[in-house]
Length: 136
Image (cartoon, rainbow, N blue to C red; front, side):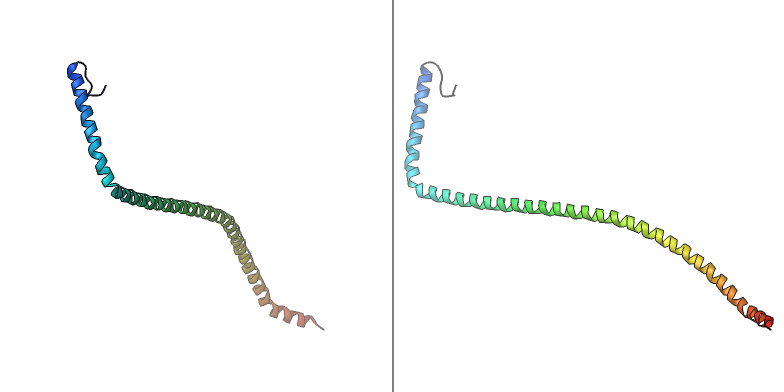
């Protein structure tokens, strides 16, 4: 129950007083409302303008968030691509390391062959002399 309503004779009297107060409040507000209707309209237009501006700012902010999310997904795609490329390069690096090891072994063997050829070339003059001495 509202606080203005009570039972008994005192309650009826209080209810009548609150009704009178409400009616006088309504009557006093009506002339003021009609006198300030142009100011109310201007306030309404101003608040509407502010609301439109706020909505525009919020739409711009949403657009910024969406652009950032798209950039984030693109950077994620770039990172995934870089990781795949690195994985592919890792196997190529492993193959290259194996090839370098094989080249080292080949270089060592070529060095051995070079030394053998050099020793053999050192004996060529003496063998030539021996072959000349055997000729008739």
